[in-house]
Image (cartoon, rainbow, N blue to C red; front, side, top):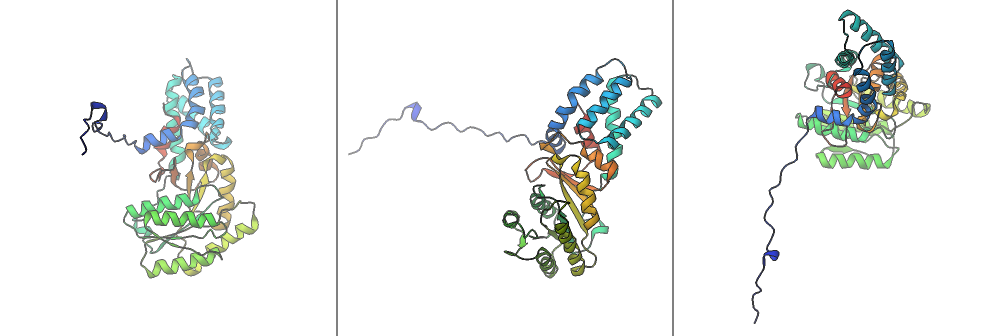
Length: 330
């Protein structure tokens, strides 16, 4: 009853197209790309400066303005220029082009004390559960950083448990729960209630289950909100009651877009909760990547991780030389 239709070439299924996997950029390449906005701010004036025929006071004054534009801060900028003048004189640097490498070396020297990775396999960090408390203002990327840390620690072979201590913002609990589902990590949470109580319960659960790392989220707040800052200090005290040796790490998450306001945040949170390390996020969304230089001079704290994107692998340990080259390199 039915005849067969003859298919022409146009009807034939398309030939299989071989898929080429996208080239995976190295972390150094991603960091350089992430700092592209800062580099755009820096490289045009730097390129013009380093293309000049001689090193003189005018060149150094313009270099000072360029560093300030990158939000290095007055203190760090003055230190870099003083050291640069000394280096130029001592090493008899005459070609402006050689200043770029000298600047990279000096920024590396300035930032190296901040390069202190968080190594949970180090004998000094053998406490279990190892309790990490995170703090920061709303929008800094705190909850997202927790999800990325959980994945990282899992990949290192550690059992992880999360505490949804941001009980003031319902979306924070949901966001953390989603990270827990992605990573197959237990999240201790309550619909409402006291942040410190949630974290206390999480510590008990981590201990009972033999968990290696417990990461506690806390409510975002501004340093000027004194009552809320007291609440986060209470969270720290409750952690110490649950585990006298804890918290073993207190990480402050900083949004790099805030520039010099990062200094005020570090100082304010440090007074309340004794910050032991920093996570600097959103370096890919700012022209103010030089803020790490300001932190190194005014309120030095170990920079445990930096973030340059939304990907799970875009949060990596801070390495001073790598950062300096990404910022000032060609």
